[in-house]
Length: 214
Length: 214
DNA sequence: AAACTAATGTTACCGCTAGTAACAAGCATG
DNA sequence: CATGCTTGTTACTAGCGGTAACATTAGTTT
Image (cartoon, rainbow over all chains, first blue to last red; front, side):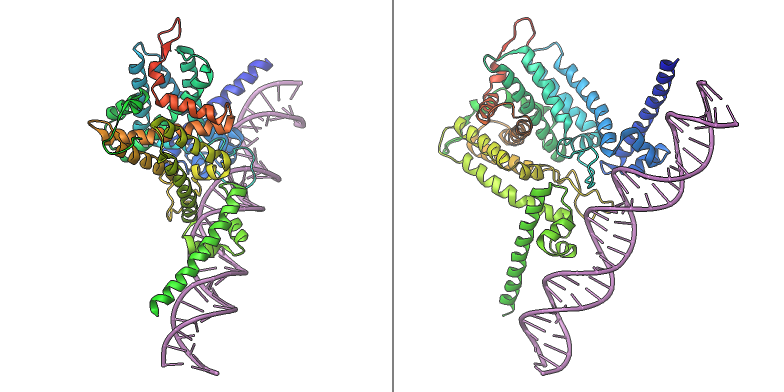
């Protein structure tokens, strides 16, 4: 009885929480990461204190919101990373999956990459800088795991895998951010160029005539 | 007469501006990127409106502050990039210069990378997302220029250079950010691992026994 | 010397934000 | 009926970025 009752309550609370998150999602996607708690509460048809009871503070709400999107994106990336194809094809598929995602929903992307908000003086949770971009960290760790599991890197392989995981994710992110802002080429060209970089074309390239070479 | 008078005034204004920037620097380095305009004004021994007369709004002050540090870091990077050595050595020197800089002054680094502040409703300048990390963009463009000038990349070389510039900078940044937070290895190891990645070791690595390989 | 100009500085305010305390209503269980 | 517990409200605080209006001081012109 006691347990079933608790689960009932918890179910109700979880459902409510999901509704609130969906409302918050709508507002954040409409107004950008600066959406105020008041606006989110209004969208959900309630008032602020309820949001605070559910999520603690703005950081909590944003973390929960980011978690949903991050999980979804990570699932897509894992699928591309696990496809049955050779290494280069899989790397390109993963890059393309990421770039497609940020291209399709740039507002979600901006929110995930710049959740650094708040700025309130008292600090009941939500330390900016630590929560700046958990998506990047999670992707980096994920990729590091995959690399470490599947590649034989000799001595120091664990360190190499982790460095490469975070490094490759950062490369993908920065190039994607720049590309999304300037659109200097097609997505396929970007994917090919990045894969070429990872495939050692930087080291293999010849010097330009008259210079010492980069 | 008229001109000398104007220059005198401008000199005085520039000197004042520099003083204010130094005060702002002290506060931001002490309190983090959330430093308030009031706190900065107090540190400078004045009150808010003067700051606003000099810098327009908070975004202007932060942009001016970021420009100083960004210029300084870019100068160091250019020096490493121009050193007389072979390509690999120069890449490693550049990586190490960047990592040394963020290691030596992590607060400056955090400020430069997360200047996304404000969140005020009326938007007299300072669009978050566009000003999120101009340092990364500038470094990316700088590196792209160097790559394009010195490397012979065949057809599509301009696009390749720019993609690689931003990609490599992003790799350096993300790996550095992760490394700064977790300190999983020495700086030299990180530099070597990243250079190895850029030198194609990802493509060259063998599959681990029993798996299809990344 | 007197008056005008211009920059520098102040106080006091606006509207907004995140976050909270205090109180009211529905609804289960003793 | 009374006791809790969750859901909801209104009304508030403290602090933020930003601005208007008013002093004050200095240099230039007449």
